[in-house]
Amino acid sequence: MLKSFQRIRKSSIKMNKDGRLMPHLDKAKKNQLLKKRNYFMSYHHSSDYIYLQKLREKFENKKFADYGFKEEDLGESSKMLISKKIQYRLWSSSVTIVLVGEMTGESAWIDWEIWYSLQNFRDSKVPRRRYKPKGLLALYLPIDKHNVPERLQSNIDSGYARELHWDEIDNLFDEKVSEAYNNRLKLNLIKNDIPLKDDPRKIFGKLSLKKLFSL
Image (cartoon, rainbow, N blue to C red):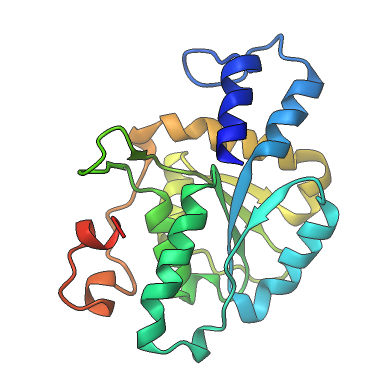
């Protein structure tokens, strides 16, 4: 999927210097590009999974990558496997969409997914392999109270993360995803220095972060 997207991007999609789609790009090609993108969905499984299902039903032609689990059922020994699966799906995604509900700000895993989405590093063993930040989009669910993660709010305030309300999905989803995607080049707007709620160095013993994220 990623290789296919790269071929389309290089052969038929022209960008301005700032990474935005050029004005003359026709609607069909824009839709083709959007269909090829993967979106990593970050959400609180037990309370918000139903909204992910609704999104999938609404956008059957788009690809949503997620790895859902019930946090209360996790054992310490399973967290390494879970984090690796999340990493693989983030690597092949271009935009991380955070479903903001009542419990979102309490989840250490959502905080970790946002933190990892904002990383920018090069593989020490394969220099040409580089992990770049993902676009970040906050999608507010149709509930009365939203618990926004501190890391997400910091990036909303800086202008890096974009925002979308549930009742705007039909008209603005593609536009907001494109804005989040284009913002990936604005590294100066990224705010990612808040301490993690659940530090991987504590979960995985003496493994360094550099070693952990090369797995």
